[in-house]
Amino acid sequence: MAAPSFVLEYLPLQITLYSIENAKLPPFLGSTLRGAIGQALLKDKLLYDFLFNNKSLSHGKKDIPNPYLLDLPDTNQFEFKPEEELTFKILLFGEAFEYTQAIVNALKEKELGLGAARYPFKLKQVKHEIDQRIIWKDGNYYEEAVCSFLLPYRTLSNVTRVILRTLTPLRIRRNGQLLTDIDFVTVIRNITNRLATLTSRYGGWVDEVEVQRIQNLAYQVEIVHSNFALVDLARYSNRLGEKMDFSGLMGSIEVQGDLTPFVPWLFAAQTLHLGRNTTFGMGKIEVEFI
Image (cartoon, rainbow, N blue to C red; front, side, top):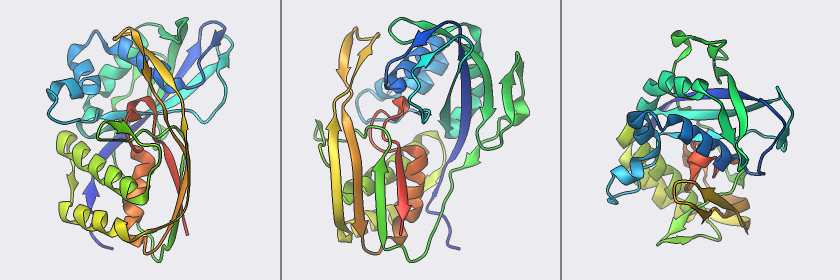
């Protein structure tokens, strides 16, 4: 087996909250959950800046991704009765896993207000999503369960066709404009650049020669079918006191050609998501290899 072209550690936390009272949450939970988590972390400025504030700390020189993302539940449940559970995932990348206990401490400290009505939810448990070991429950924190994993570097042979579908809205900008369609070159550039920036900032490694090679190879891949539609979404920012455009693409693209070199990167994209606002759960995809 060839040596991997990228190395990145991550820690997948499975977070379970429970409702204190009857609650009705908005359809897209990413903004709701991120806002509540951000409010919980505000007291710890170091933690908040590290997780949420990297863009402003870069002084506009480059768009540095934050070292986490939300992986939203695969459910259409938005109404909760008292004691009903809401489970989602937080993925911490690279050095961010060192802040696990601080994150847990912030989440368990008080009720989380979700939605515009600030419906109260409490932390029930935190579990390692891969190991299935409890990290926090009933007031007890189990440090030995906090173990990061290498992002899987998966390879397959003789892949000649790929189908990529978006599971949550995908936002990619070019020259300041939100794209209303994407091609395979854009997908590959996005995931390779995302891995490069995450590893350079938070630890890890990317083979820059291989990145350039497969970015060039992407131009040789033929698009069989592409069907994307822009879904109009908006979120209210408490920090800015105004609504913000949150629109993104939903749909799929099917491509053919020699796709074997792209397999590890497309596998990684399913964990890391694509595009902007992944910290809200945006850009989640699934891929089929043929």
